[in-house]
Image 1: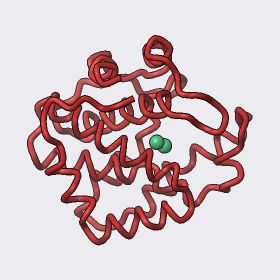
Image 2: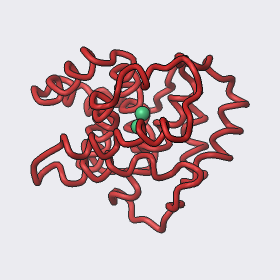
Image 3: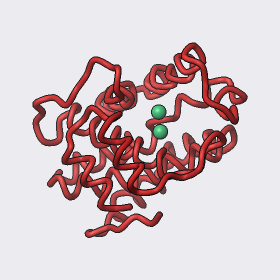
Image 4: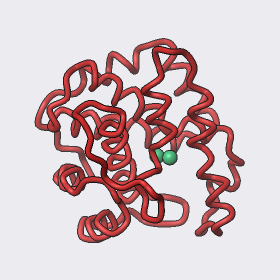
Length: 195
Ligand SMILES: [Fe+2]
Ligand SMILES: [Fe+2]
């Protein structure tokens, strides 16, 4: 799968990847979990690209890209054996892994990262079974940016090889996104366009 980008997104992503504190976070993630690091960069690339199509301004794009880069940072605090178990997890185990959203939000400190922290905390809220569904949201708001990160995250997870699954074909990805992702269908279409 290659991401087809209608506009250059390197300007946003490259700047952030060269920032010292981002490098520190990503190096830490890489040392614990290189697979999640690679996933985080792909999600950032895709989310930023979708954000451009959603008409976000540069400031919102930077927040979006940063949140996407850091969305799974809390996985460093999850038992790595559980995280990479080559099988489907039980409901209890899944709850333990899902706590990476809380661990991640806790790691991101400082008032200027308030939005990023909130997006990291909420990035799994658009999964079936969670209470949140697509909200009436303002362009560039936390809810809007969270929904974009969530769509890019699910899309990349479905398109990637994981210890317990192969990468899925576009048809299957579309089917699962429609039935499991409770966010906006426009975002599903934006993600699928890039398959
Ligand atoms: Fe996650
Ligand atoms: Fe993720």
